Length: 485
Image 1 (cartoon, rainbow, N blue to C red):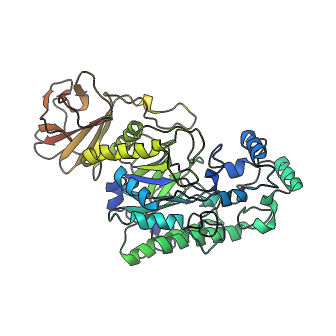
Image 2 (cartoon, one colour):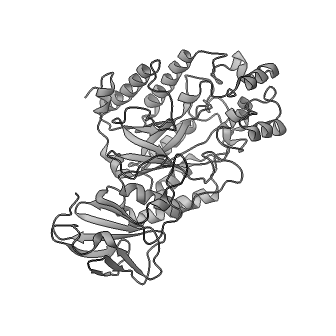
Image 3 (cartoon, rainbow, N blue to C red):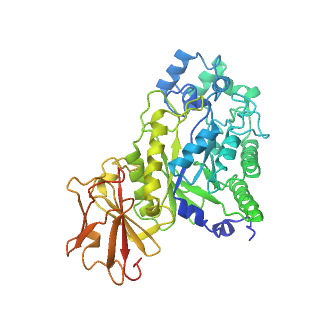
């Protein structure tokens, strides 16, 4: 099939089965912003804005000096990636149980993490002087079933470095900040030193170069004005190019379609796999496949000093809940500037992988059952204006269901002190299969389980020894066909 230059044609692109089956991916927010390790990955913007982001503005002047003497570009020589080991990263990602992986290849700051020929500001020319993304792609491809993702944030780069008020802009021009210097116009893209038309052409050239050079299986784009009149034609052309290149190679690829803070998807809702940032504004039920983008840190996406991290249990509860609702998880790591990961991240990924090694049959390749979840939904939603999902309070009453080939899985998101689990959705008379439940086993345990079923609930007695921690997957074999609707 050849994809035409229209949304109607692109919408016809089928979602690959490997992505529907894989469920779990990993990437990382890493770049020059990891050097100051302060505030967040938007350091390059906030260091210029005294009125809105005074803490970062003051920190920069106190630590590095006026932006006229030390601009954001001056962090690049300090971004050396001297401890970067792509083979060790690939091994860790594989052992975590992730099925697709990559990097944020370019963030809002516009610094490319691959050795691009399109623009001089890249990791191959400067800083590490290594093709960081390319090295990771090659290492990941040592694992035949691993797919590759490229995440692009640079649609927002134009005017991104500028202060958000005229007073701040006047201050920067008077002091001679380098963001207003035409010599650096190809890095600090803004209306004072360049044109949006030139920027958009480079945006497309960079995306196409990554497609041609690294052959990624998934593209992900952060929020942006992709459907505005002066952009949409270029965007459609780029996406059609991606799909047609894959078709020519006999590959099945996909694009994630983000729901950003604008509360409008980047592309038509019917296109691609829907993507939500930390579950922001995501409803409990969605009629299309989706993936949540989640940071491993409790604080920010990139690395900052003193940040804390989500526990393996919390991340696993996220993954199980997402899969039960027809979704998946894309987890972002926070590397230090030298390319190393903190022990909390390394140990956490290993623990997640150990759980998936035992329980993967209840996750990979499964599909949602007619009932997604049992338990209190309210405790999983934050009370913010744009509510997110959270999984720090899950317990034995929270049950999630997945299904595959006539087998139902009920996954309990917490440990039961009594040693029993009650599942009301599977009480006697519940329409589970045409001929009822045949047997129940705990995935990863050899000891058979005792269970009873009455008009109130299915009650399962746990074995004396547990094969793992965090969440417990019960394999429920049925007589006759499993009823999916």
